[in-house]
Image 1 (tube, rainbow, N blue to C red):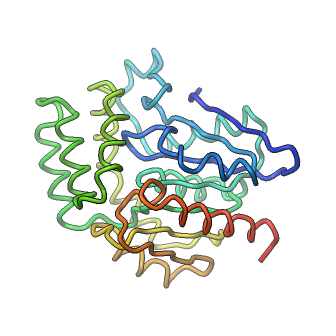
Image 2 (image 1 turned 60 degrees about the horizontal axis):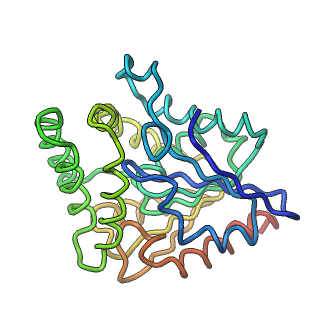
Length: 263
């Protein structure tokens, strides 16, 4: 089972589950924890092979990671803790896992907050993925990871986010990175499926105005979804919860609270 930490609220029965992106860990939510604990029960988890969720013995012989496989990891924790329904807050690749969970188990998802959401991979990112695929087993994975983080978060004010994700990614193993990288080859087909439908769950996209690779496609997506809205934070890149935590916390807490009240 994944490594996880819970924080229980004395009065609220509402749960918020945080899902980090590839290479990160639950520690990326450190600027959210204090404020969110005041309002909700909190579940922080480390995805398979990240943070303190070390690969199991079975994983050593299983290279066939899939998005469904990783999504079921999250569901296993919810079931173990007897959390029937939760609000989900994700960043980057974590948003893909949350959306996949909403597709597979919509009854378990109260709402979705998708920060730095990945809806479509543009040509620049696909070329980068192809380049990385050629060298993923030949060079230290952290070199490729640094290249990807710089491509996604290129500006000077994105430096804190880059360094945070690189620091956490150093805790991964080379083989684990390769498993996750191979899983990335499935993402285009999955994203096309997401764009074709609407799960009819309250959804807030929180995007940085400088999230050059992913913001344009999210703007188009929001227009097609009946229960979706978009918050764009200017002078901010991909990892909105780290770069603009005060705005992120205020708007997301209000959004989740409104969903709880039925607004």
